[in-house]
Length: 293
Ligand code: NAP
Image 1 (cartoon, protein in one colour):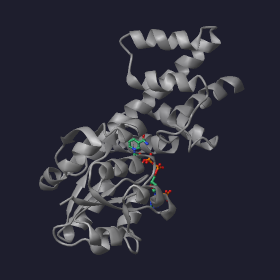
Image 2 (image 1 turned 120 degrees about the vertical axis):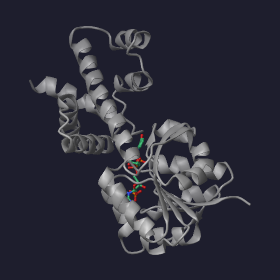
Image 3 (image 1 turned 180 degrees about the vertical axis):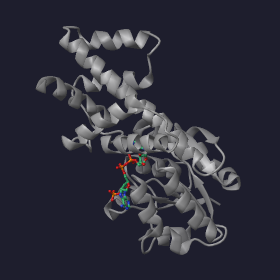
């Protein structure tokens, strides 16, 4: 019999992930805050739960993919939330990118009811999500991790079990902090090349042949120089990740001036109304700063 799984949150990532689970033969019950977003999934065989609680009641395992800490907490603790229907033996797997505190609060609540909890944020964006090529950074209950492997095999190309709750969140924040800083350095380089009279496409070719070649520059460079910021990873989420990574550094007094500057650029981009565009739209902020100086 097909394994049954609940899925909460059908944004850019969740929609692609739930689609893959359906295509690979899982029985999936979906919920999204804006319920109309469930329609496309229903067309390919999903059932709908009216509330997060209804989904958890129906399914032994429920996966969540939500925007940020406040969304992750609200889906668990609000009226008709996940917590109301957690009973012994149920598994809750939160794949959203959040901080250690958020994940720990959810973990404590779920396990206090005899449920099992795993945090499992992912590395990889819209395309890897569509292709089932995510990298899964799981932490929490090892037994639930083992049970979730059939899901992870569909969603990702590799999964890591990192130990206690919080380690998945930390790993994800470190990775995205590096990514956000790189995106800013890349944007400054593109502006400097342009202002120096160099051809941007040639810069991309040169970069791609050298030691700092990477899939992100290769993927985003051509669209950035066309001012195309169709969102794969919304800028507002990248800024959230910078903010949470800097807070993680605060705890141990880790000085991160490069990340702090990158965070400022993402904040500036948000204030310019670019938060729903792709995070590569920070390039516009860098260009804007040059114009105004
Ligand atoms: P998204 O497209 O903005 O989707 C966000 C989802 O969260 C939507 O389903 C949204 O529901 C829901 N949501 C927001 N606030 C809520 C609330 N208060 N209560 C209930 N639901 C709420 O974001 P995404 O790109 O799929 O990202 C989801 C998570 O994955 C984030 O934590 C992000 O940092 C992480 N992530 C993203 C990428 C990427 O490249 N996109 C890669 C790795 C990790 P509505 O439809 O009703 O707004």
